Image (cartoon, rainbow, N blue to C red; front, side, top):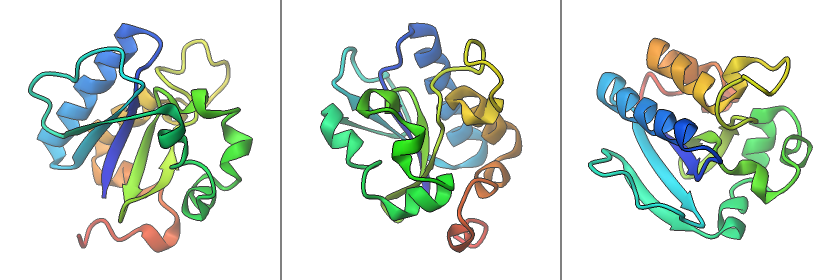
Length: 151
């Protein structure tokens, strides 16, 4: 299990904060993290402890489409949560056995998104993981994927 950030958020501040939270989570809780740079616009973070890969927008969108594990984790089809490929950029997901099983619905923070659960945003979710560790991840997983304490 690991956390995946679909990078290139629209604002540098949110991108920097997201990467810093991923680093803190990896250091503090030994949870694996990775960055998927979508249509890269900047160099990968220096000294990032996780993996970094580059993908086209279409390749990244493949994680979200025709994905029954993600549909179960979100409680509805991904097409109901994301208007299209561009909506995935800046979000963070949980990956189990190579499959994306849950993802935030909003990049950055909850400011400006209206009345949304802050943990549905990339930064809000990562702050919860930084504070509560694997428990915050477990709360988002579909029941059959909740094996994290044993692994």
